[in-house]
Amino acid sequence: MIAFFELVVLRQPIPNLFQLLMGFLMVLAGLTLFIQGLELGLFPLGEGMAHAFARKGSVFWLIAFAFSLGFGTTVAEPALIAIAAEAAEIAAEAGVVKKNEEAMDSYALGLRFTVALSVGFAIVLGVIRILKGWPIHVMIACGYVLVVIMTAIAPREIIGLAYDSGGVTTSTITVPLVTALGVGLASSIRGRNPMLDGFGLISFASLTPMIFVMAYGMVI
Amino acid sequence: MPSFAEFIDVFLATTRDVLPIVTILVFFQFAILRQPLPNPRKLIAGFGFVLLGLVLFLIGLEQALFPIGRLMASQFSDPAFVGAAPGEAVDWTSYYWVYAFAFCVGFATTVAEPSLIAVAIKATELSNGAIGSWGLRIAVALGVAIGIALGCYRIVTGIPIHYFIISGYVVVVVQTVFAPRMIVPLAYDSGGVTTSTVTVPLVAALGFGLAESVPGRSTLIDGFGLIAFASLFPIMSVMAYAQLAEWQAKRARARRAAAQKNTPGKNTPGNDGPGEDVPGDDVPGEAT
Image 1: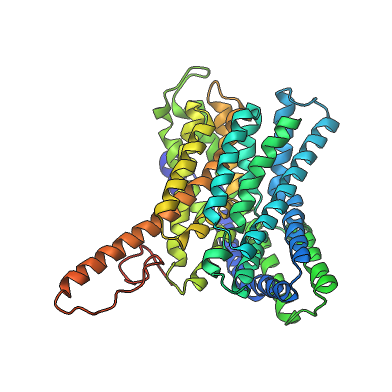
Image 2: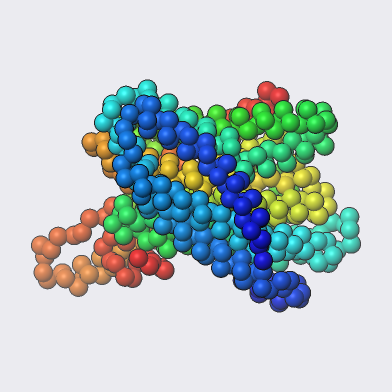
C-alpha cells in the first residue's frame, strides 16, 4: 500500500528497499512473539490476580490495585510524554504559558499527572461498575454529556489536546492487562457475564482524560 | 540494518516502560495477595516474549514505516503538491490525496496494532468464536480509516472539532440503543485501543504537518484532534458491524422460517450475539 503511494502518486523511488523489507520482517516477528507472550504471560497473570482479589474479598485493595495500575502505567507512557512535551511547546508559542524551560516543563508534567490521575480514576470506576453491575451505556452517555458541557466552557486551545489525550493513554502492555483484569473479575463474580461486563474498562480510560484535561486547561 | 547497539537501546527503553507495571504487579501479588506466582517460569517466559516482541516490533517500525510515513505525510500536505501558491486559500477538494492517504494509514496501522490484537483474541475467546478476530479488526480499522480521513477534512476546512465529536457522540448513543447488547462494551473499548504504538506517531505527524501547511490553521487548535477522531469512529463501525451481522442473520432466519413454514415447532436460535446463528455467510472476512 505504501509502495503504491510512493511509486504511483508521488512518483518517487522507495529509499532503502532492503532496510524497508528488514523492517517489515521484524514487525512481523515482533507481533508473533508479542501474541505468544500475551497468551503465556499477561493474560493468565491479569486473570489470576483478578480471581485472587475476588476471593480475598477486599474491595479496598482491589480498588487500590486498579488505581495504581491505571496511574502507574500512564505516567510512564512514552506516547503521553511525547504529546505532553509537544503540547507544552505549542502552548508556550501561543502564550498560554511563559516561554522558558521551567514553565514548559511544569506544564508538561502537570498534564501528564492529570492524565494519569484520570486513567487511575477511570479504572477504579470501571472496576466498581463490574462489582455493582451498572449498565455501561448509561455511564458512557453521562461521560459524553460531561465532555460536551466541559467543551462549552473550556478554553479553545485545550480542546483538541484534551480530546487526543483520551486516545493516547492506553498502551500496548496496559490494554491486555486491563482487559484480562476486567474479564477475570467479571467471570469470578456470580451473575456477571464476561462478554457484557468484562469489557469496558478501556473505554472509561479513554473518556475521563478528556474531562480531566479540560479541567486542567480551565485551572491553568 | 539495525545495529546491535540500537537493539540494546530500544530494549532498555522498553524495559523501562514496562518496569512500573511489573513493580505494581509484583507488589500487589506478594504484599497484598500474599501468594506465590502460579507457574512462575511460564509467566516470566511470557513477559520475556512480550518484551522481545515489542522491541522487534518497534525497531521494525522505526526502520521501515515511520520514516516513510512521516516523509509522505509532509509530501502530501505540501502546498506545492496540492497545487497552490503559498498563502493562497485552497479549496478543500484539492487535498483529495491527503484524504486517501489518511484513510490507508488509518486502516493499515490499525490492522497491525498489537493492543487491538490482544482485545480481539479475548473477544473471540469469550464469544466462542461468534465474533471473529479478523472481522473485529477490520471493522475497527475501517472506523479508524474513516475517522482519520474525516479528521483531515476538518483540519483543511477548519470546522471546529467539537461539532464533529458531539455529533459523533449522538450517533454513538443512538446506535447503542439499537445495537445487540453483547457488542456494546466491546465497541466502546475498541475506541480506546486503536490508538497506541503504531497509530499515534504517524497520525500526529500527519495532523501537525497538515495544520502547518494549510494556510490559516493554528497547530495548537487544529493540529490535535486526529486521534480523537480515530478513537470515536471505531465505536460506530464496530456497532454497525454487529448490527449488520445481526440483520443478515435475521434475514437468513426469516428465509429459513418461510421455507420451513410447514414444519412448525422448530426452535428459533437465540439472538444475542452477532452472527451466532448463521456461521459462514454472516461475517465478512471472518477467519477463526
